[in-house]
Image 1 (cartoon, rainbow over the protein chains, first blue to last red):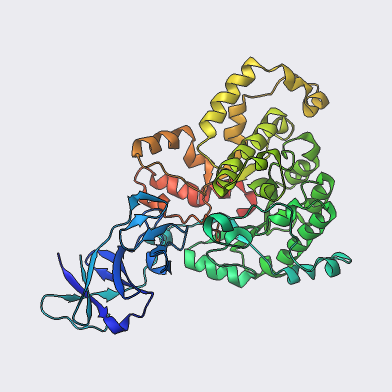
Image 2: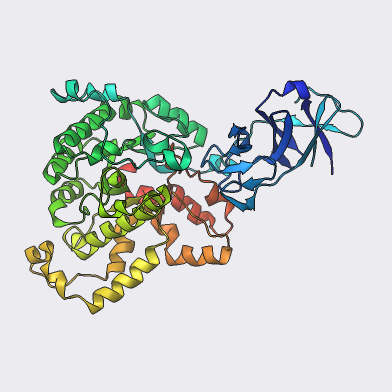
Length: 102
Length: 384
């Protein structure tokens, strides 16, 4: 496992996303209502870029820009069928930094 | 690079803007056979005669309230989630983003074609075609188009093909089908097929105008999945069945029909069932108009032979089974590498990039080339 520095906390505004290359993965890191979440950037459906999806804070989902599959930020579950998941990664705040573990 | 600095064992993550289109798309010629084009309404009005120009001040509305907004939260014609192309430059910009070499424009507005006023549909079709011929097709060889016609008025539809069908930028004829109108396979539509075949133009049947007006199917329908996802396939099968069983291809043997957004994996069922059923029940074929006209008793071929010879299918939406063994079976049963023409349906919410063609190891290199370009070149002679 490797830790990656994604950003300073203040560099990511509320309800924003940053796509980063971490090892062989591209990961979309979200800040929503003060919390950070990290999902694989490729939608399991047809490969849409999750970093281009719309964040829906009130539902805590990010909506794939291509076909509007809603993935839960806190669990990686598909809203309409929780048996389906997008890969999640561990992301935490250390001091004033956002740290991603891949 | 991100602005943060690594401390200890942590590595700074590289900030990226990923391109979700498969990188292999840059190495292939890609012809997209189903891209929707939505000219500005006021621009189209400029191509209409009076009184339509003055009276039709907006895209006409229709009766029934079936809309994707309830299922996806998106409002608007065609759910244009990827953008909207109103001009040739809009289209070229999108093509470059998608690594697409050539597109076939399809009208981006389905609703007006279900209007009760047939004259409005004819006027709109001519205005759309004239705008394309005037402003869009001259801009680039990378954009080709289908002739929009009023297929519910076959005489008018044929007249429009004759009027503009010799323009080299138009490579096909566009019709829609749905439950509020009889399948275009009936003999009433022969003027359209005759005008098309005289010019070596394929005819498209595209899922479309069936959700705006009440039909018996709609009265039992509540969801967008039932309507667009499922019913469109049944309407497609009815249209294909009408064409085959009513002798269309015995009258016009070289006619090419392109099915767009009509599903695909149903072909084995259709082929097996129609052959079996026809051979057991052939007697009423002699009663259809074209057979009466020709004095013939039976079809010249089995239904499945027409299906695989006179039809091609746009690829979107490609619904892939998760089990590769199942995919391989379907792929072979449907003769997919010969039957499919790549399409994205850009910019709609059912958009389908070519990634699946590159990512599936069961699709051979030869099949990729066929689906992405060479099948279309063979099917639409004017593509060259």
